[in-house]
Length: 273
Image (cartoon, rainbow, N blue to C red):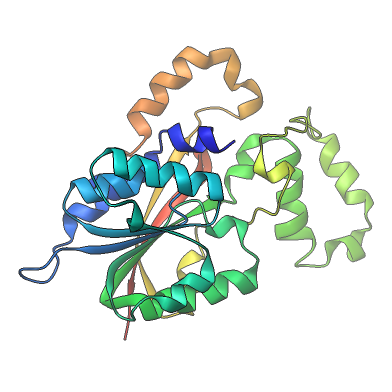
């Protein structure tokens, strides 16, 4: 699937390049420095380099790393700007050296322990008042889908934390499913991450509290990957849906609709002393 990740268009990249990066000015006479951790096929990294940012990338996946290095070389940049590796490679980078550390499509695949380790390492890599820009899967979107992900949301976010299974019995899951027409849909897909590996969804209302625990102060949230309708019926209105998405992506990424209608969100947070 590496080729698909290499060519995919990402609104999250546009949010960073057009809404976040232009607000920042590096130290007088110096370039903005950025680290793209989990840089994938290198599309965002290349765009930063083309804009004059001093940027490095780290990518764990062998084929994606090679594709990204080739992409940079073809555009006239040094392929060594991309490092093959993962979390441990961060220990070899100089502390307090980056204005931005970027994690696009990374954190949702990490356990809470690994996520915690990564936050701590990023804090030490950032310059004073440096920014971490990261994406998260929007947990509230599962309430909008009216399918098996909605059932998962109730189980993981309500039933388990409050012990409702013990209080009411496990039959409550069956009763919840009875309220939906398609509680077992969508069918398994070999191309959907949530069907194959660990994927963590995040509450956009409490993400600031999570970040604050690592001395990262939330500045802004930007929603992306909008859906005007629950995905099980969206294909019926595909043409109209695409028109809707064009007016919402990026331009309306900070509006409240994103809490429910967007599959993911970007956070911009700043390192605190």
